[in-house]
Image (cartoon, rainbow, N blue to C red; front, side):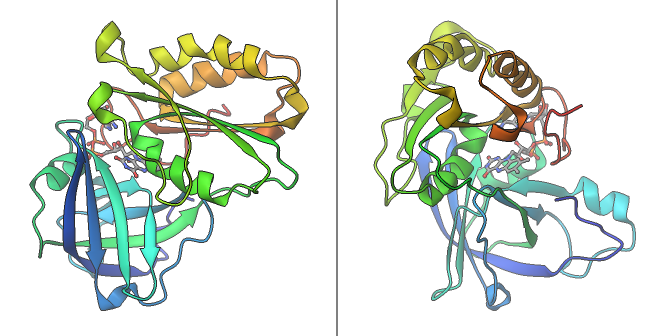
Length: 258
Ligand SMILES: Cc1cc2nc3c(=O)[nH]c(=O)nc-3n(C[C@H](O)[C@H](O)[C@H](O)COP(=O)(O)OP(=O)(O)OC[C@H]3O[C@@H](n4cnc5c(N)ncnc54)[C@H](O)[C@@H]3O)c2cc1C
């Protein structure tokens, strides 16, 4: 979903309630506030916009506002306590990453949304997810929305073994973990090298839905390789660039289709 800043979406000022350092590169931050009344993110893979350094009322200049905005996954929302959980990758320099690394209980920011997300097809028997750490929160949400008889196959590329973590508190899965640092690999490369293993493990391509979310260049390569496989069709594949190498504030709507 592209937020139309001329038709201003609902803005909610929220306050940091809890912070948990989940792994060396991931911080889980729970936000609260009365403004979260009525919030819900019913579609898995939905996103919200986080506005840093912004007053709850949007400034007049939409360009300036966009530069202060980043896209994140509403990982969990508890309607009783009105608490919203977001998991931030601490990747280094970046408005959001720096904010999350320094965040303290009591800090505030503004959120807008949610938007987007996907419809999980009915009668799905296998869901293959190829993700890097930025999409692990969304993969967890998708996982929790799968029909009971659907087998998830999840490949997670992360920096090193310390980044392994549970994808869901309610569903047990055993993802395949790929560690960039061990092989001095650039982001996404290990997902690409691992793809042939996934393809040989799939028995019937008609039963499979593919979900790719990672660095944008690599998302395109994975998408194009998958679409060359007989039995993989565009209507059973969702791909999304979650960030782009050497690009700040990459747009949130790169589905690799052009
Ligand atoms: C639908 C959607 C949902 C998302 N959900 C999450 C989420 O739940 N958690 C999360 O952590 N991210 C998530 N992302 C990714 C997040 O929006 C980007 O990583 C964003 O660029 C971070 O902003 P920043 O201000 O830290 O860095 P930016 O200012 O955007 O970028 C600064 C530099 O950091 C690099 N960079 C940005 N992100 C990464 C990264 N992940 N790894 C390595 N280098 C990076 C850029 O290439 C650039 O060189 C999501 C993206 C989308 C589209």
